[in-house]
Image 1: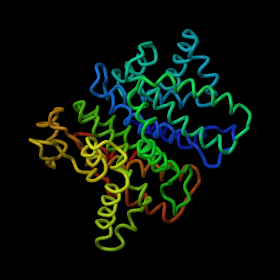
Image 2: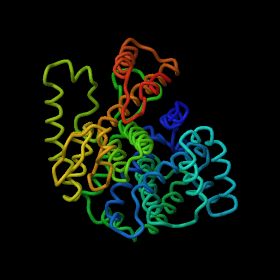
Image 3: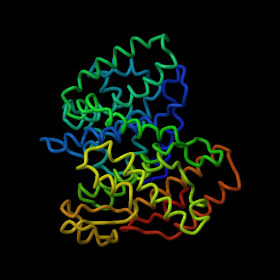
Image 4: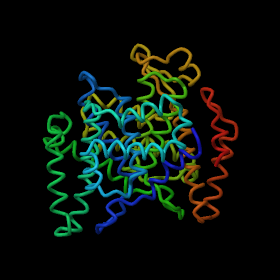
Amino acid sequence: MTKEFILEIFSAAAMQRWNDKIRPVELKELDKQAHKMTIAYFLGKFEESKKGFNWLEVIEGGLFEFLERLVITDLKPQIFNRIKEDRKKYEELTKWVYKKLEPVISPLGQDFVGRFRHYFSSTDNTINKRVLGAAHFYATRWEFDIIERANPSGYEIPAIKGFLQQKQERYYDLAGIQQLALYEKYRNFMDLCGQLRFQYRWSHINMIPRTSVLGHMLIVAILSYLFSLKLGACPKRCFNNYFTGLFHDLPEVLTRDIISPVKRSIEGLDSLIKAYEKEQMDKEVFNLIPGEWHREMKMFTEDEFSSVVTIEGKTLKIETDTISREYNEDRFNPRDGKMAKVVDDLTAYVETYCSLENGVKSADLMEARRSIGEKYRETVIGGIDFSALFSEF
């Protein structure tokens, strides 16, 4: 993991979407990609028992497509879709994309680079790519519904609406898309996740760029997954680490982003907030998803920063080194929550770095930066020297 790669991911927080249309709210590329992956989780849960489905291919495919968007963000979707229809031109575009990204992704290893290149060279229409395609469509359609209300008779609006309708019909065979069409509660869950696009972190401090809670969660998910690969984590462990990152702040849609100094200001306030979050999640969120997903979602959102394994149906807290040595198998359902916490704070630290680099400085920002840096002056988890990575920023 390098400073350059992390900053490349963070750059999406400043990338505007639909910037040729009237927008009642800011729509950023980072938030779109984050919303897309929460939708991919929902759709994937309905497909995971089918032949050929692979969660790691969904996770990596989402990352590869995100990296591609970072490079081609200036291409209008209409132009990009026309290029994709011409196989030869699309191959030329993907070679150019790789050339631009090579300095950033090559430190992640040749295996990762090889999978990245294969993903765009392969023409296979796998179930994993279809889940990502449907998630991409749904997130785009979700944004378009906002744009359309502000531009009811605007230029291109009817054409875009017709195009999206055509795309929707391509995914009707997916069980998750059918469920979204049938049940309002599932659409409400997607809306709930999307709402975190408009909830900004560090709301009491001027930051540039501003990062939404949802965008922050995607960055934590991506970094947690890549660190999992470095640990040699089994597939289930990679899955748990990624989706813990992607959903760990979901309760904040009910409580807003409460900064750590406030939580620590009164003894017992942090535990009170946690109890309230659990109560509200049970009341407002869990009834929006199938009951058989509840245990997994609670793992992602309730005790998200504990490293755990499951043995004979019981959840046990275990250190990362022990998981790697004794429980690094799918049957133990391992999750490195302690590592997720370090990554969560690393993203906050990088946010302070980016803001300072953009010329924004305040006493609160400098104090936040100092306290996070002090916390991780000497931190090694699973052989990964996080203190060295912190020092790069």
